[in-house]
Length: 283
Image (tube, rainbow, N blue to C red):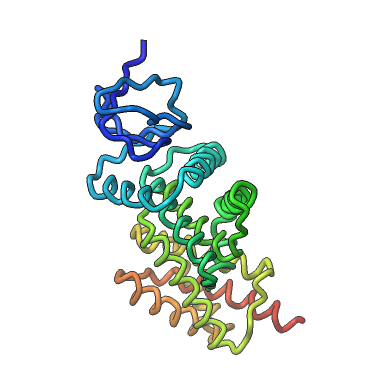
């Protein structure tokens, strides 16, 4: 027999905080789950549609404050959204997404009501880097439109995708954002230096973005890629402009990440830059 949940505090008709012998304090979500319930009442597991832990007291308090400013329908929709995300990623999610994404979407809906539009400068990079999360975020936008009748702008897809990626990888959202901002900055440096505008839909751009993504990950983890001195010499002599730019990009990475970058990264980046400009010049 499953152990029972007991009401600690009802947050609204569909959400309550409960105690459990194994999980301690949990948040339970279910249609009408808290209606008429008082502290100490037992909750049937059949009534629970979603359960998550919010062991951090500050997060639990933040979640309570969010719920105080949204209606019951919104919470039902967020429950559908979280369920869809969980099924789509087929991986455990960092429980913080319940607070962070609920807060983000609630604020986005409020901005729409007030006629405030916020652009997302990292939309293309996010779509390229996190294609799976981006596709799930598009589903989230559709769910909101179908159930609440509000069409969030395309920029919100990228913001939501970052929340999903953060929850799946268990990386702090600020770290994920820093990653996207750094890649965006690097692309600007490359375009300014080569005096080109890169086709954001091209396979060369996608390959460059993914290369930068994995390079940043390697640098942050201190992983060293195999270095070929002979290849480095060839590239330095054959493509001096691209080799120089590769080092310029590496300096940008070092300044942003505050860690050293191995020389071998310049070799592989030079090859990507050469392919990119060769493609641009052929058109």
